[in-house]
Image (cartoon, rainbow, N blue to C red; front, side, top):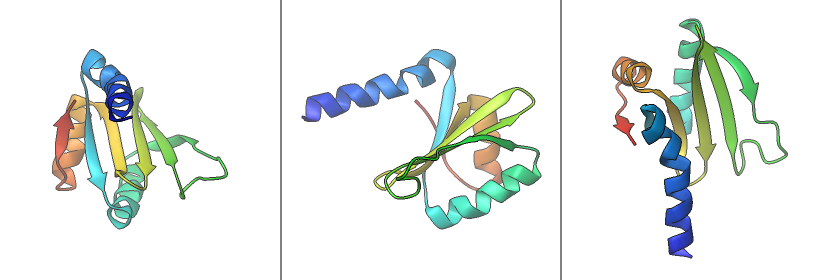
Amino acid sequence: MKLFVNLMRRLVMWPFRRRDFSAIANIGPQEFDCVLPQLEQMGWKIYARYGGFDAGIDYDCIRLKRAGIKLKCEWDPCDEWRIGGPVEVIKAIASQFDLVAISE
């Protein structure tokens, strides 16, 4: 089972390595609730939101867009919130909100 989980994680991270993406991981729910409105004030618009029956319980996803640049914000109970996008944008957001950006 562990082999399968590791393989799935590598497949999920492939677009980050392929497209020079980065992420900010392990953002707590309260912290993300402060970050999201500030991103919206900076001009980021929500263009898609996960609407499944388990939204906010088992999984959640919010997609943001500004000037053709897209960010993906995902949540699950184990890893908390994660914001992924282009390296330079993620680094700027991480420094502004005192978060740690990781390159995958």
